[in-house]
Structure formats: C-alpha cells, structure tokens
Length: 117
Image 1 (cartoon, rainbow, N blue to C red):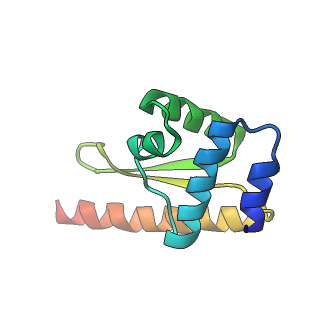
Image 2 (cartoon, one colour):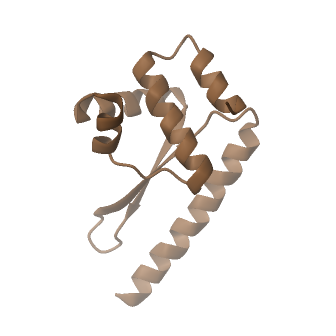
C-alpha cells in the first residue's frame, strides 16, 4: 500500500466513508494524473447517496484534504469539468506545484476557448 493510502487508512480524524472516497481520489489521481469522477460514481463505490458524497467532499475541501477545481465555459460560465486533487502528500510543495500546473492548463484552455468564440 502506498504511503499516502496508509496515512489515510490510519487517520483517526477521518470517518470510514471519508477514507473510502479519499482513497479512491488519491488512487485515480496517482494513476491517471487527475480525478474527475462524478458524485454518482463515488456514491456507487461507497454505497452512499449523491448528497452524502457532496457533503463529504465539501468537508474534505474545508479541511484542506482535497482541492476542487472547476473548469467553466467562458461564454456561459457553465461547468464542463470538475477535477479533485488530493492534498495528502507529505510534501505540501508537491501539491502546490500540481495546483500551479492545473492553473496554467486551465488558463490555456480558457484562452483557446475564448479565441474560438
């Protein structure tokens, strides 16, 4: 088990459902570079309701365990993609670098979409 998953599983501050969701987010972020699963996907995984998943993600975000990044269409401000980045790395600098890279990518995508409109 990777160190980050071990830390999650042994963190007494996290409830069981929070551990399941955070572990899934960390795993898919690690193997795919980002996690963009829906609340329904997480609800099915943990046998929870979508509203309960939403509440858990909000709590994890408030505690700083995750960062939710929304990609919006420049003309309608409609969300077309949501990425959840875990912040469970022992080196916070890694997390900050990832957020910087995402911010740059998001800016390029927005500029490309704006120039096509």
